[in-house]
Figure 1 (cartoon, helix red, strand yellow):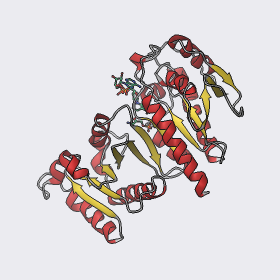
Figure 2 (cartoon, rainbow, N blue to C red; figure 1 turned 90 degrees about the vertical axis):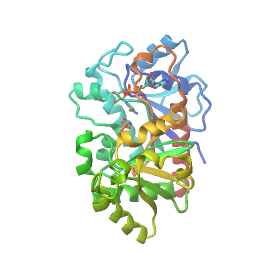
Figure 3 (cartoon, rainbow, N blue to C red; figure 1 turned 90 degrees about the horizontal axis):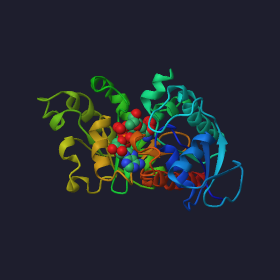
Length: 326
Ligand SMILES: NC(=O)C1=CN([C@@H]2O[C@H](COP(=O)(O)OP(=O)(O)OC[C@H]3O[C@@H](n4cnc5c(N)ncnc54)[C@H](O)[C@@H]3O)[C@@H](O)[C@H]2O)C=CC1
Ligand SMILES: NCC(=O)COP(=O)(O)O
């Protein structure tokens, strides 16, 4: 079987994404990477960090280390490192959508994305809450955000929502949909025959039997009961403060957190460098770095490429698996 072909989207040009892509071009990997982005930004970044880079056609077969296949998508403005320019908002988003279109029509087996600066995109007049939501809208499907490192998988019931809006968003239909997507992906993409999912409560102590909030009693527990009766292996609702204790995590394949900052700090603390961000439920694999734009590191050569490398390796595995099943 030929190597999986993966779109590689650097993300925010003023951040560390471009330099991580340059480093990826120098790394031996069992996949064909095709960058989608601005040549001048990539060249300027390579110069700043003292690495050579050559560019070649997107269709090139074998490429030497230090050579990047490139589909050019010029940015509107040349940005200084560390200062996003809202005029680039459209082209940053177009890079992601171009990769998505290529995944949907079979030109790519998956996409790997660098960090995007959410505020800069919005300042540029493009409504954007996250790439997860962008790709879900583009593909017209429901998705789940899951971050993973070799020790832990954490999926989110809600993603980029103001905290104030979370309780109203945590409904039984939403949780049923999220658990369905998560369970299916653990089986199909990760080869887990009978996934065990630990579901967190929303309130402190999972509501303390209704004394600290009713969402567990009224919404989460009855839903889990119903889904268990259908054969899903679900624990919970669990108090979030103790759910991540090593003894509690034994035998658990993924934790489902109710909101972004309930689950992600634990995941990032347990392994920031090796973690990746997956979008489950899309018709193709999308894997991103777990970190943000790290503007203060851009152009210094000090950004750690481990998360991007892990994202490429994970996407290559998922892309190859999907090809085998097709
Ligand atoms: N995947 C994505 O697209 C993500 C994008 N973001 C966006 O990034 C922007 C900045 O977010 P922050 O909260 O500051 O998070 P951040 O991840 O950019 O930075 C947090 C800390 O981690 C360090 N760091 C991040 N990546 C690193 C790397 N590769 N090597 C070494 N150190 C690294 C930074 O220097 C900083 O100290 C925001 O606009 C946010 O929306 C945040 C998280 C993920
Ligand atoms: N915390 C994850 C994050 O902000 C990146 O999300 P997305 O842009 O991949 O949706």
